[in-house]
Length: 266
Image (cartoon, rainbow, N blue to C red; front, side, top):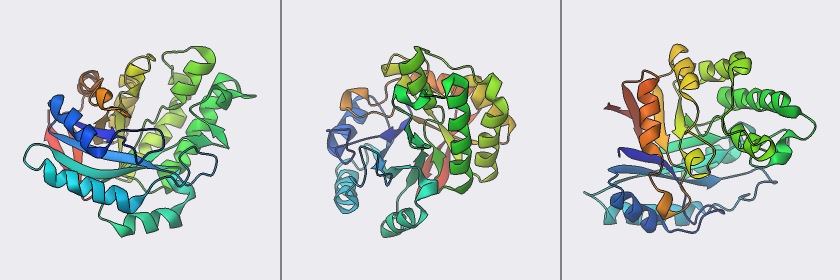
């Protein structure tokens, strides 16, 4: 185990564990470094809309930094939903404290929830995938983030709607590469998200093929994240995620401190 850069605590509306509980779980899994990345959402339809309590979150993470110093490196991050749509709110949030890491994620596209089968209503599979990557391109170009979270999250809706455990994105290669190219040109990164493993959907995502496309487009920054919302899921699936990074030809993975990249050679 190397690191887990996508973890949620009770400061997210969909998790119950304390920051300390997630830290202890990380230690038990043999992790050396983690990033707590609780949800920050300004989209009114989102279940986590304005749930995040920045000051209490900051205090809790700082306490755990002190408690686990020397045993576990605790990075303080956030996962911001639809960051391209709320620039003023995000500037205010990030100016208040010196965060280490910012995930940018897309949970909604054209008012459609990417975590429900209804995302595909009236679109069909290919239409829904196209809509998703068009909106993700906007996020990649305009949003504030260090790394794109679960950039193939449309898999979740496709699994619920069509029972697909994997998505063949080759028919949408141009759209996907557009996103990856922008991310690379901006000096940003993508994560390999292992949540699909515990959800029974398949391998972590994006696929090795997409990771290779990212490298071909000049991408260098890749992080690993379990997207755990419970202590028992911390680190789950990261062994396979790391294998996929190697298969795609990357020789190192990225970690962050005060939003600056630190490299770990594989």
